[in-house]
Length: 151
Image 1 (cartoon, rainbow, N blue to C red):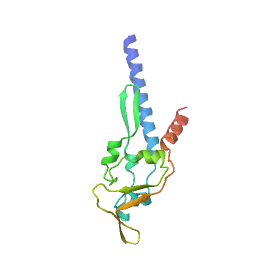
Image 2: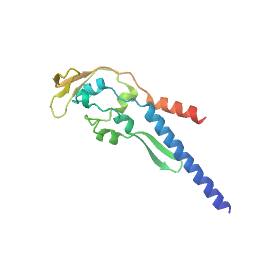
Image 3: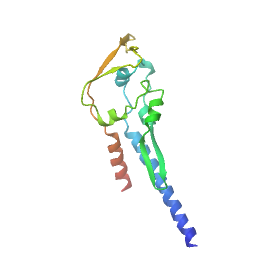
Image 4: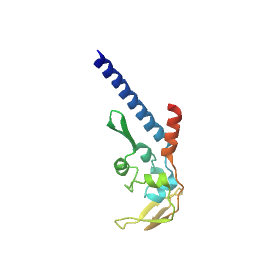
């Protein structure tokens, strides 16, 4: 009798943990930046009319480690493989932490970056200088919002 009751309590707790993990995952997706055309043009050869944001948001996942433990965050493999991320690089640390210096992008295969601006003009560049970016601490904001909701 007691064993059955204890198993029921454990099952309810596990379901509660699963629900909380899903809620934090959703909150983190809400806080993650959607992206911008400006950033996409700097990073990719994608024409303006084909830009589709959301790769970072969609790469946020939860992984069950144990009955009471989950890992929630950016799945780097998923982000790198996303078709909306033509550079196929995990750029989440640059978004989360920002960049402190100007850095130069050069394609590994030596081909130029090509993009079409809003006016329809095609541009080519072998190197692109990226300006420093402010940190966007979406993880801390998500945890704060989640913490406030749970309390």
